[in-house]
Amino acid sequence: MIDTFYIGAYWKDRKQLLDSVIDPTVQTLKRLCEIDEHFLNLYELGMSRKQALECRVSLSPEYIKKLYQGGLKKNDLDQNGYSKIGYRLSLWTGHKDGEASNVSFGVGKSSERLSNVCLIEMPAEGPARDRLLTLAKVKQIMKVLIENWQPDVVVLNSKELSNALDVGNDIGWVTYRKGLKSKIKLKSDIITQVNFIDGYLFYLNSDVVYNYDLMNSLAALK
Image (cartoon, rainbow, N blue to C red; front, side, top):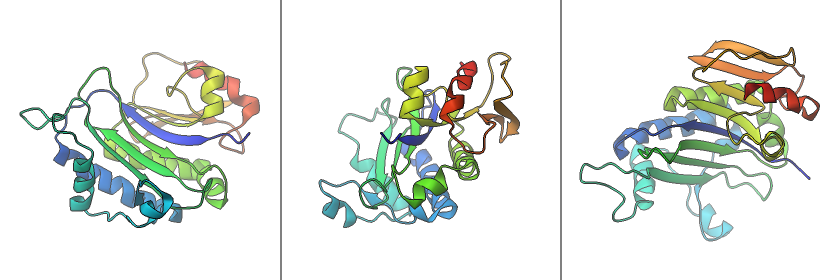
């Protein structure tokens, strides 16, 4: 069975007006286009593939705001214009089945029970998967998410790793943490990069970004 990978940025409640999440969203999408051609074309999700391909997304602030507004329900905003459940947006790269990615945002949430998230699902197969699942590309994408959203945690995770370590989204094949609660004792299997943007980056000391033989070494990051 092919493992499924994603890069996710997560942060706790952050009260934001809709207008304040537009520019970070636009900049995130534009930077993804610069990092890899896989993200050059983005589409709204539709009822069918044909419908979705008819709705190519413009990366203008006005267009992105309209998409966010389309996901709001009548009573989502309070009298001051804030939303406890935040603003939601999901886009798709339009490639054939197995080779496409989704990019989704769930941001501006001010409820302690809900996490804010920006999620980039990697292709299950194809040349883009091979390009994107390299340490260089993963670092570039993480940098974009950190600079635009200031998250607490960013991970390159996979279904198999998450299930094996039973840690949700706290640990990934590559893990960024804005801060550390305590010192972490790590084996030589894991490389620590201090001052990655404004935090700490952890990844396997391996020729490949994910190595199932070293999976259990990542448990030390708990």
